[in-house]
Each structure stands twice: as C-alpha cells, then as structure tokens.
Length: 128
View 1 (tube, rainbow, N blue to C red):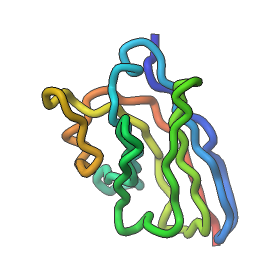
View 2 (view 1 turned 30 degrees about the vertical axis):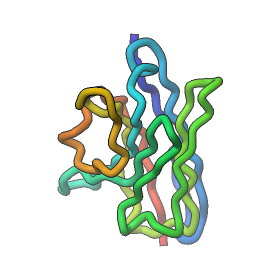
View 3 (view 1 turned 90 degrees about the horizontal axis):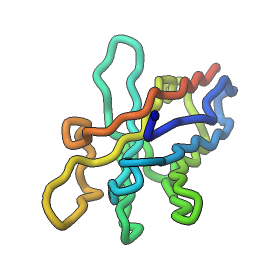
View 4 (view 1 turned 45 degrees about the vertical axis):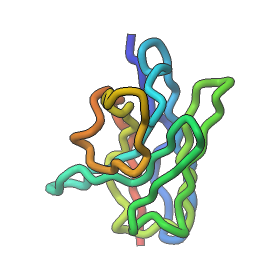
C-alpha cells in the first residue's frame, strides 16, 4: 500500500559512498518526475536531485559533482548514487513524486512543496 519505499541508507565514513533506492508502485508509477530530498535534524527539508520521464535532471549545488540520480524504468526504481560523502550530508533521505502541473513534468523544481507523494525515508549518517 506504500507507493514509494526508500532503502540503502546506513552509516559510512567521511569520503565513503552509498546508493539509495526508491521503489515505485501503484499511483507512484504515474508520477513522471521523481525527486530525492533530505532533512537534517533541526533543519528544513531540502531538495537534492530530480529526474523526469525524459531523463532530464536537476541537482542542488550541494550535490553537484558528487551525487547522481538515475532510473530503471523496467523495474520502477529511482536511484541516488552518493560519492565523497561528508558529515554535512547526514540526514533522513526521502523520495517523492511531483505534483500534477498539467501535461509536463518539471525536473527543475527542487522545492519539496512541489511534491505530493512521499516515501517513509532512509537514514544516512556520515562520520568524520
């Protein structure tokens, strides 16, 4: 019954790597733009990366050059590959489906308020 399920989080040392997965099912498979977001303790939720049905992507400045978003459409999975992790990347990571804005999907939208179908989250902790 949960349409988006995240996995792949865990604890890693400074400089390490993780791959997060978001499995889409049911109504989530119709959302043609999927985003990854994160929320650190005591801070607001922030956009990390997005990808739409044409594989157009958008990255937050903090993620550029280190993170890569991709999708396996046959398996309905969206990935977030994270390299060179830093302690400041520590957060709960969520995937989400974008809200409907008509016939187009907008990967440039990184504001979590533009997303309306959310997963439960997976914790990423990076130690010095």
